[in-house]
Image 1 (cartoon, helix red, strand yellow):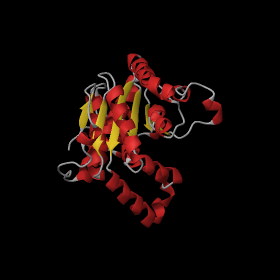
Image 2: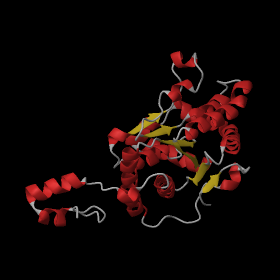
Image 3: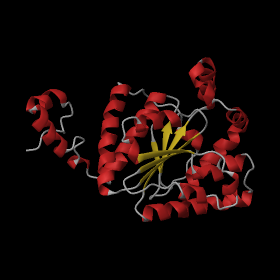
Image 4: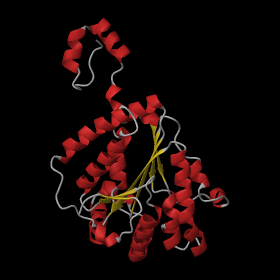
Length: 283
């Protein structure tokens, strides 16, 4: 299966697939290229004052963290925030469930990444019974209105859903048990949620069908192959960002810095050190 962009068409989650038809060749090289592409886009976003939200959803072990690590690895950490979303604090529970997300929206020039998101109201809160049917039922409208407000205000919103199979989730749980450095990732909540697999699949399907719009589409990525999912997620993000900023004018090495390097060390240093063909000395 391939990546599917949803903007309002009704789909069946089982028909979207979890395994790509083919692997990505030279995945690590492509990720390296995409990370540089993303760095350029981030610099352009900062200069143009654009605000970006990247929203990652998917079941436990779907690979959200792996994508986020590769997405942020070479970005300027001053311009990117990652918010892992869990249960709301007690003081947050006395407010509207979207309140805590309003507090985490990006500043101008900033990228904000949500590892899980406001969709918890129609996912875990629905399936685990933390919200009543009336509460999560009306949330689809509330979420669509919230995202409309964001995009109308100029926020670039990118929503990614990693579609994982139950068999592959089992394999990843076993990998985490075998690897000591990954055991911390497993929680009792992860294991208990597996008992509700069918209910979660139904909730994901409703989420995709009821909240995919032209202004805030969902990108559904087959996630059984980690490298494929990582390349596709980074590609989608890079493509979306390049549609809203002009990366062609971005020089990762500031012209003023280049001039100072020449003054201090001579032009030959630049010829040896600069490996990025788009960054050169000023005319």
